[in-house]
Length: 447
Image 1 (cartoon, rainbow, N blue to C red):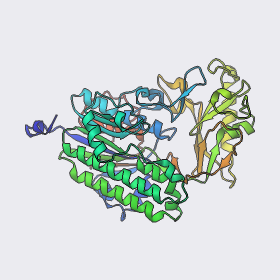
Image 2 (spheres, helix red, strand yellow; image 1 turned 90 degrees about the horizontal axis):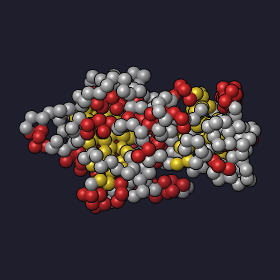
Image 3 (cartoon, rainbow, N blue to C red; image 1 turned 30 degrees about the vertical axis):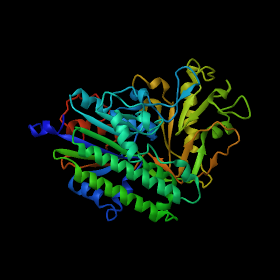
Image 4 (cartoon, one colour; image 1 turned 45 degrees about the horizontal axis):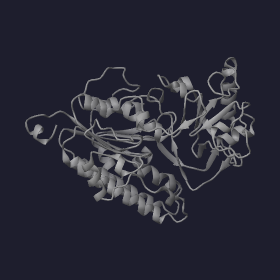
């Protein structure tokens, strides 16, 4: 459907979705004078804090946000998942998402979708109008479809991602410059394809916000050295969202959302080292590097972020926990996690979620048995190095949070109340007047 069709009277409602990866609602709502375009959407439409998913990891969040379904149905639980019946692991890519995306529903309705820079969409789907894969893509040449999209993006120095290694330097100047240049090119591309006016759903994600938060969020929250640079970066984000809003064709609703919140990071918590010290986990060698190095005495192992797996007989190759002891072992582990304290005397874990409370679907066979949601300040890592400390610090000073996820809908009829990521896909379909089976999603429309 192109502009000529619209001039003939086709006025089907459209949606432009702009993702702002990892942007907390509090950052935007508590600084309205700095971010007037977000404030305008909240004033003329609706805005609020929503919940992320369990676990709040981008690799799991974006598949759930774009399908309206939990990881038990998408089959993606995090940056690293495990194969059924083995200790082998893999990094989930776009083809591993086992549920229809929101743009698949749009295409099935005979309408067009432009999808840009969404994490976990590599390789690009050739069933859509155009797609540029985001995070985890191997490079722009293979990430852009069709070829003319690649040619245009290359001409504007478009980047899939910022260079995160620059954030490891004590002097953040070069990192901030790289982040700004990445953001600028992303906006230029988004504006270009929004102005093409040949889509029904435009779905684009700014992921650079997450990168900046990882390395500068403490500076913002605790008045650090780079606080002004952080706020200046976000002023640009606000400006770009406002300019995209002004560019949108009539009969288009703007939706802006993050996939999780953010907070300052005090300690990285190496969960497998904690398990080893507490007698839950043992390795075959003194220098383990892979999950396959665990012994058959291991009762529990962990993946990021805060995912814990019982080494279960009949499920794991060297399972040590009998099926009849599963509940007792899991309860004991849950209690230990809830009691864990950091060096500062604070409880590390806010709550522990059991498998059946968070995951359901055809792919819950690879689900973690427990997920620990940390208190702010404790970033739950895994790691298979036996020489690490349980509590450590690194170059990052910001971490994901389950709470404080942001949602803005430029529509006066929308209501954000106890909403979460699962509600976004059915909301977009309702805004576009696309029919779907009620109960097809884990969320519900907010309009």
